[in-house]
Length: 425
Image (cartoon, rainbow, N blue to C red):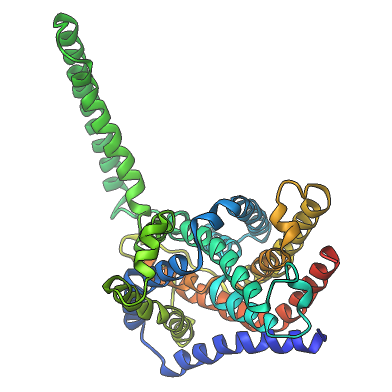
């Protein structure tokens, strides 16, 4: 495939993002309207997109064969985290803004970039070297690549809407320092009294159990199990966002083939409900991109160190924002792709027995390589809008990354195709 064809494929793919984002910029939505869009996106559209894509593209057997993909995704993601963490320290980035940069490097755009790019490559007559065998077809190759990407998307969304949101949450401010100290003292006294009461209660229960042999030990352990389960739920509950719940439900459906078949069988009421959810999911990416363009129209010089809902939001000077953008671009387009290709090549050459599918299917190598070099996920802006912090900074990172991605990915995809042809020659 000529190099110019790679440039056309990548620029046409990212041009769609630019057109929709420019429309959002022209509309000039207000900040309150952007927050309303974010709430609709998180509560309905994003969960709908995740559920329909996962239940349609994956099955239980594929999940079992691709056991290594989530592990590799997490390991490669840590490379980006370390790069951003230590790079942010060297550059002196504010802690909260540095966390935003960490999420931008870790979580890449899987769906809206990978899917059209893979379909474009499959439609080229020069992509025969990506076929698995003589019986394989370009469309089947594209479907497998999309399915591989959806598995990466599962990990992407699981971590983004749980760990990512937890990382970005700022500390809560108190009204005065004395009030804070008084609150801490009250909490300590309250905790001490509660612990003392719990200790007395537990001792009483144990004494009663020792004096009454007929009393079941299950009655003694019941309060402990109830307290432990309550604490676990309190720790997990903040992470159970609608997108994460949608992913978990979709994986549950995929793991039960009969249930998945019943939902996707055409001509049934279950399929009608699934189709309605699918229609809602189709609006997720355009709405997110409109919000991206709309955020750029908001006054960039507005103060970002306000107290929003009791949360401390740091002010990020322009020079620090520029340094953070460069840090994200180098991490997403250089550091992570190089490390990813090196690991995949090493496994293929020296440990192919560990991942036979990597040796047998060139589409898997191409998918993992492309995902490692895509721009940050546009949902980064949705997370920032949900938390009410770093919205302008997130929009700036995304807009710069997608503008640069037009030129960078046109080169990187050609390199990935060249590596795939060498490895699977």
